[in-house]
Length: 269
View 1 (cartoon, rainbow, N blue to C red):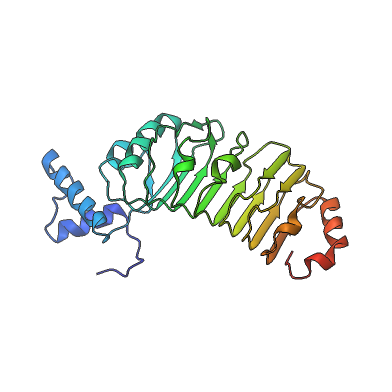
View 2: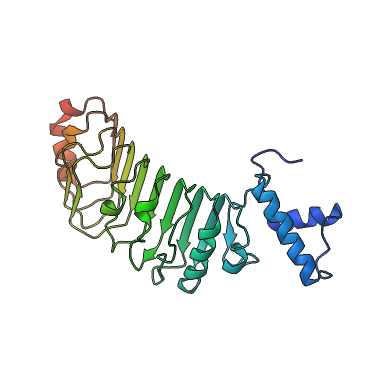
């Protein structure tokens, strides 16, 4: 019996099952016995007795194998190659209980096409994509249950229009994700967003927060946006803001912030 949050590798779990007589030792398994093992593991996942938190795309669990784990709740993939993206999308569509998905591409030269997901799992609550995408997935607006999104290392895309209407989004992290000079949060969007982090948007020189946008935002973090010299236009409209965290910003940005100290007495930076 393991504690609730205990982490165990797939190989060790198989060895324990072999010792208990529930599986056949490696090297003496038939194809049918392998299918039984996979089915038993999938049953444990479906009964919420096992959570598979991560898997290597080129290891024992490849994209085709993932398609069999329909009860998966948490999935983290590193070093994903472009040629595996379609298989991953097909697998994710079948994971009706999936609550967390984290995907990181192999390198900056890999462009992933994740548009093959026609309908994302309704249970998905946390999404992290790190790497270049061929385009923003068209299924983004369908993420009605998502509360946290982290997007990293895709400077070719502006995700705000695709995400602004998500009804339950609470936290949004954008890291090295946009090469545009202007970032505009439109009127009455991001109605439930409480945490926004903007980091390393190198070309950004103007940020605008329109009236009624992010009405319940409590924490805003801005760092390493080297060309942003002014505070966000309309920041005074963020009446629920409790914390403003600023790191490694342009000297003119910091100077303006100091000049307006009275307006930010309750903020931390």
